[in-house]
Amino acid sequence: MNADHDLAAQPLDELDDRILAAIADVLRANDPVPAGLADDVKFALTVQALHAEVAELQRLGAETALARSEYTRTQTLTFSAEALSAMVTLSPIDDDEVRVDGWVTGLDSSATVELRADGGTTTAEVDEDGRFTFERAPRGLVRFVFLPSGDVRPVITPTVEI
Image (tube, rainbow, N blue to C red; front, side):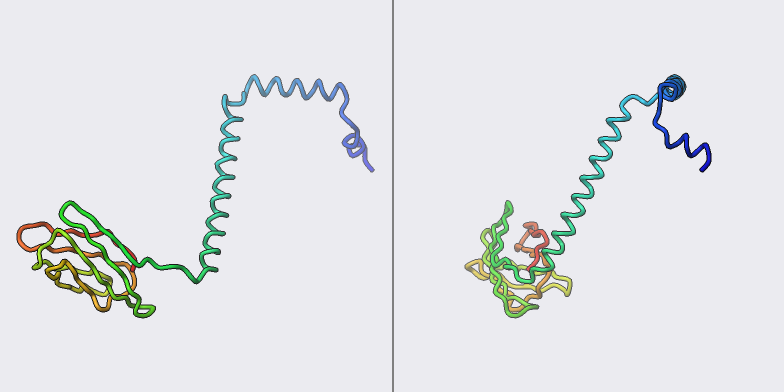
């Protein structure tokens, strides 16, 4: 063994403490720690820990959602606007299509309703009782557009999944 290794293995003494204190004084005088650095570091570490926790929760949520293949679909939707109120009931035909039965108030019997989907637009007439039907509608994202007769502006629903 050499002498340097022997010194490194020995505990610090008073002389070592004085040398280290002198070096610390020089560094504090010439390169001080910025004010608030410790708090900034703690905050940054907390934010990173929160990001990691959110990522883990999202991962677990996605795995849970994928593990659950069964869920309950919406059967009834309601919409209201200044000019009208509408209720739509969905009846499953198969995995790809539903029957849509709807009732609307505030429109006359010459009004029409459009069902806008990725595959195109389908139109239904509103009867004198405010009823309309789409015999077969594709599952997926759709919008309903209520088209009153005359100079009344149409009412468009938000996109919904049926």
